[in-house]
Length: 257
Length: 307
Image 1 (spheres, each protein chain N blue to C red):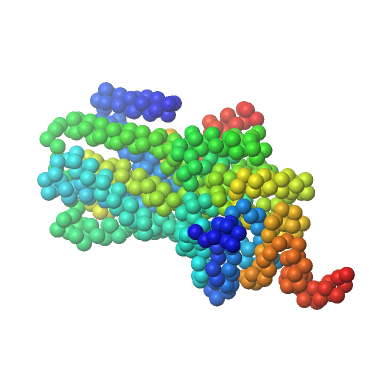
Image 2: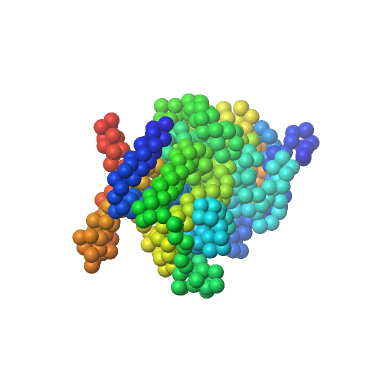
């Protein structure tokens, strides 16, 4: 098991990882490390490779080059269901419920398949507990396709949490929510982190990322262009350039006090 | 519990047909049990997992020929039926590995091709199968009425076992996993579900009882030929029955089998020359106007009443 200098163990490591789609490098030579207990904000403009990074870890689109390790174990070419069983969960940018099942059954699936629960009965008990915790208690017997977007996002989260993951990727969980809903979602994410789950948050909303991340990682054109404490990363001229374009970045740097 | 009672009552009611001593009813009953077996079997892969399989004819013919060949080598009838079922399981598991990663239309076409391949195989291996000439099966040394009863009871037992396994699977982890695959396979896999194992199990379940049904059918009709037991209609009928009865529901396939058989009989008698066309039109109408099957009528009314 890899150990950091401060004795914190690395949960996830990327060694020179690339993922190509017919010559296009969606992820290009990325080396990265996520330690246990962190909340890492993963940001970057559209098409920067954020979702690709999640797909590489979860085995949906395995790396074409380099190595991915979870707690020191290579998972580079492991099938998605096996990665899930090792404790990696994700939410989808576009919510992916089982539409004609109840909310409870949806959550139960998360407990049943990775082996958190052994029987349907046990899985449903887990599901009810989680639904209560996430404010879905009143809709637990309703069909998943009847939920509002905010609740569907919650359901997505509940399914992932039912897996008792070590590492949780949140892909745009706040997209499309109003500001009250975003605040509630942020409180929830902090809550999840406090329960000992390491989180990687993919977000468009800078404000959201800054308010919860302990570290920021910035991707641009598949390359890692910044990695460090949030306050340092946001002042990085490369990051401003990636988001705003060269001219604006130069102008910003010029007018800064 | 309720499903088990329904099954017991249904099987008992059907068994009572024997008391009538009417060979026409027994023949209808045997066909009904066979159709119910095929429809319930298809429901594992087509209804629960949502994979539109056209492999029913392949499993049916495979079971039929496996049992016939074994009996021509001297194996008694009932053990031959059992081996036919095992052969169908093994075959389905093997084929499943090759085609279950395909989705939608691609899977449908691939599953359709299997029966054609088997049919050609049977045609070319004449020394074993009799080729296009077909095969005669040993005739039981019983009177006509006794024979009708034997095959009726055999088919009824098979249908009952198939329904019992359906009840168990519907309430099990396997059934739940299959429903998840049907609704969103990618999401299910991300939750740690082993999709390949689940789909292979569903495919094997859809094969085993179909294979035995084919084996029993062979002895029932005494004579089999490739164009009869690998008939593409054998793959289409169960699908239509399940659509009629209710996709992915527990007893929908049985209801569908009954309705289909009645339609087939009535239409065949009344429209001898154009029966296929009339039957086809009726099926299209039923599927158009009852897209969720006959089983949905009751649920639709209940939902309306509580809303």
